[in-house]
Image 1 (cartoon, rainbow, N blue to C red):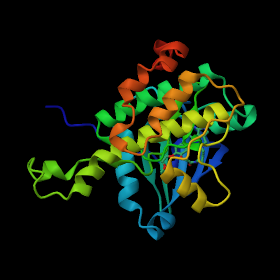
Image 2: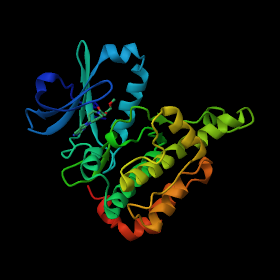
Image 3: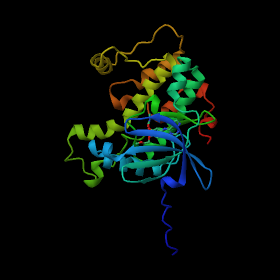
Image 4: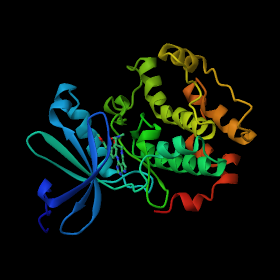
Length: 278
Ligand SMILES: COCCOc1ccc2cc1OCC(=O)N(C)CCCNCc1c[nH]c3ncnc(c13)N2
């Protein structure tokens, strides 16, 4: 049995740092090149004191274990990580065309084919993640990136959870679980389906459906599912139909990921083979 070669210990000396790619909550992302191979990566630098201050150590560790284990053309790869005295460095796949929402801001809104292609890619990525018991829970335009060919990549699994549900630890009996506990378990998976509805609306109208001046009003609109479709831009009935089947309060009644892929708006607008190409 050959000894398991430990994965290479990386350090900052292995990289040449390039232009900053953006600033997130806990750190900045830089373009970088691994010197020996010339391989281009994105390097996310996170300050340990920030992580300690918000006690996010376990969450970050879980996020890194999750993202390292995920292999999907629409999920940004995490190749590895290393740290020094004050910082943690994530070695990530580089998405050449950056954040999707920059493209959305530039054009105001997306043509239906483009929006449907992004929704199909996201749905396939989420179906893959859910199969691995990973729930993203924080999908928003700034965490959606585009590679050189314009393929969508989900980044920042910062708030994802490995939904190892309590049931398994209680050897299958539900007797002891409160209804809201059981409900929450099921409910968690469906948060990502709801978000797909929000993103679909925002791709087509340029603004999220429940936007309001004050946060409290947005909260009220979400809880009421106060959904309306402006008369312009003229969006197809199929698109509105898909959005209306995702923005449903009762989480178990939202369209499943499989049904999204089979929805007429998707099958009509997307060449599905194209979405899951590398
Ligand atoms: C705990 O962290 C987990 C990993 O989170 C990330 C990995 C990679 C990221 C961004 C990530 O989190 C969000 C974030 O930091 N921002 C919103 C600011 C930077 C935006 N990206 C800009 C960007 C442009 N080309 C890229 N190619 C690869 N990755 C990128 C970017 N960003």
